[in-house]
Image (cartoon, rainbow, N blue to C red; front, side, top):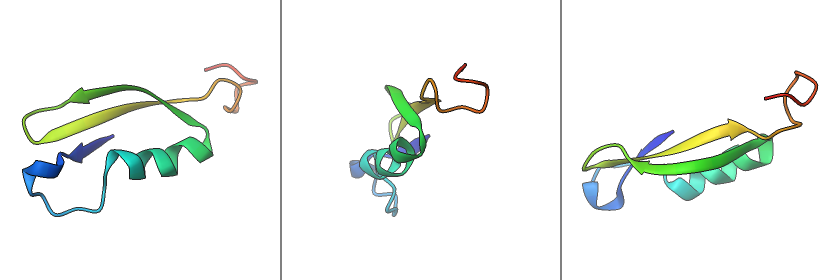
Length: 58
């Protein structure tokens, strides 16, 4: 899930903390943060083991 870096001046309410605040309570886990390019960062999210519909398999 990408979001613009603060200094990029892209108008947005989306931040790394907002993504986590929404994703973690619904069963996702953040496993990696990376720079997408000079203006954007990204957060890799996966389904928490045991929270899927596949009998706990991810």
